[in-house]
Length: 180
Image (tube, rainbow, N blue to C red; front, side, top):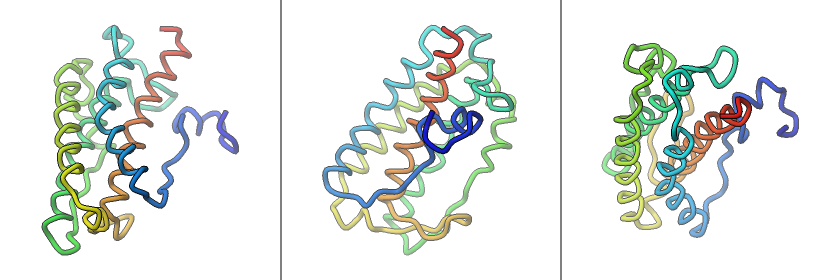
């Protein structure tokens, strides 16, 4: 168990909560690499799951595995424009999705995850191309989140590396507990 976490908290955050770390060139390079390989880890996490398994929840009161996959993709697709806005505008305010409401829509509850897996790989590759094209000072560019305030591209990079690892771990840990 992660230190100082309840069992419920550990199920919800199997890799712990997000923590921003002061970026270095090495950390950025590793984070970009993590963006590149995340689709492989997601594909492996859901490999050979049945419809019933995809419709199981990773924790009591949590989303189904399919909802987690769809959410992960929708979140990346939603956040990618934040990068573009931060690079092209002066401190833009960005729209933020109501993820809990999105997860309740019929398409987000569907066990058909194939298109979401394809879209996740595609959007992650776009992120990587964009990150790799930036000069060092671009990572300091900012955007405004209505809940969290002013954030940087470095924050966005780290947060979305964590986000993918977080949700992939929810799926993988559930599979281990269920012995699938």
